[in-house]
Length: 406
Image (cartoon, rainbow, N blue to C red; front, side, top):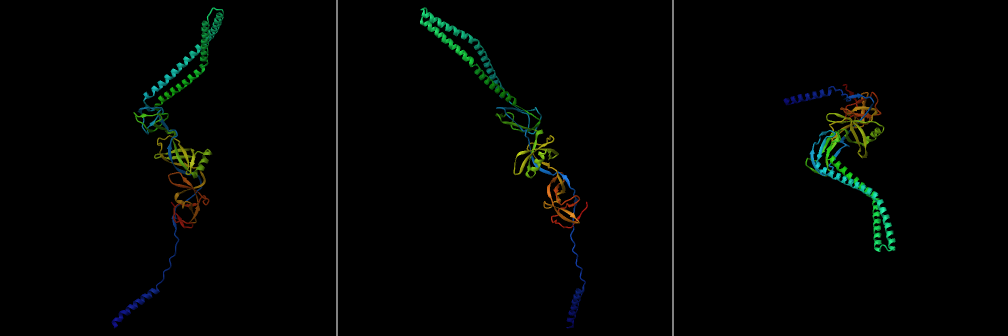
C-alpha cells in the first residue's frame, strides 16, 4: 500500500509545483503597434508651357494619282516598267501599236483636205456667178427687145405667130437662167457656212485622232512611282481601259481621322494661321509633316486631317498605314509626369509632411518623346510640390510614405 501511495504523492507534488511556477511567472509586456511606412519615388514639379502630342493612324494617298487609259481600241506593243519602279519625267512607260492609230489620223486628214477643196470650189463658183450675172441681165434685155421686135413685125405681117412664140420661149429661158444665177449668189453664204461647219468638224476629228495617236505612247508627266501595271504586251485593250497608274512622290498626303474632342482646337489653330507640326513614325526615320487642311465633311468619330511631308521620302508607299504624332497647341501652366503618377485617371498624390494627399487633375495629353510622359493641369499643384511617382493601388490620402532618393 505504501508502494502505491509514494508515486502518487510524487506526481501530485510535481503537478502542484508546475502549477505554482506557472502562476508565479512574470507576464510579458504588450507589443506596441507601429504604422507601416511605404517607400516611394517622387519628384518636384514645375509648371511650364507644354505641347501635348496626339497619336493618329494615317493612310498614304495621292491627289495627283494618274490613271493612264487607252485612247482607243488597240493592242499593247510594249510595256517598259514594272510595279514599284521609280521613273523620271518624260520616260516612256507603255506603247500601243501605232498601226491601230495612224490610219485614223490619215483618214481624218483626208476628210479635212476634201472639205477644204470643196470650199475652194464654192469660192470659185461664186466668183464666176458674180462675173456672169451681168451677162445674164444683158441677155435678158436683148431677149425682151427681140420679143418686142418680133411682135411688131408680126403685126406688120413679116413674122409668123410661131416666130413670136419662139421669142417668148427664149425670153422665159433667159429669165429662168438669171433667176437661177441670183439664187446661186444668194445661197453662197449658207453653203459656205455649211462647208465651214463641216471643215471645223473634220479638223476636230483630225485633232482627236492625232491626240489619240500621241497618247498611245504613255509618257511619265512627272517623277514618280509606278503603282500598278494592269496590262501586258500583246493585250487587246478598249477605249478608256486603265493601263497603269502612277503617282508623284512630291505630292503624297497622309489622311488621318482627327478625333472629335480635338477638332475644335485644331480648327482654331488653322484659322489663326498656326502651323501645326507632326511627324510620321517610319521604321528607319521620323519624317516631318505639316497639317495642311481638314476635310469638308465629318462624322461622329471626327474629321479627316491631311498631312504633307516636309521632304520627299521614298519610304512612303501609296496605301500604307503610318503612325503620326501631331503636336497640339501649347498649354500654359501644365505639369509633365510619368504615367505611374496618375491614379484612377483623375488623381495624383503630393507628399506633405511625410504623408500623401490626393490632388484632382485634368489629363491634357501626352508629351512627345521615347519615354511616356503625361501632361496634366491641376489647381492643387504649385511650383516646388513633391508628387508621388510610384503607383500604389491602395493609395489613399493620409498614407505615410518615405521618399527614396535616387
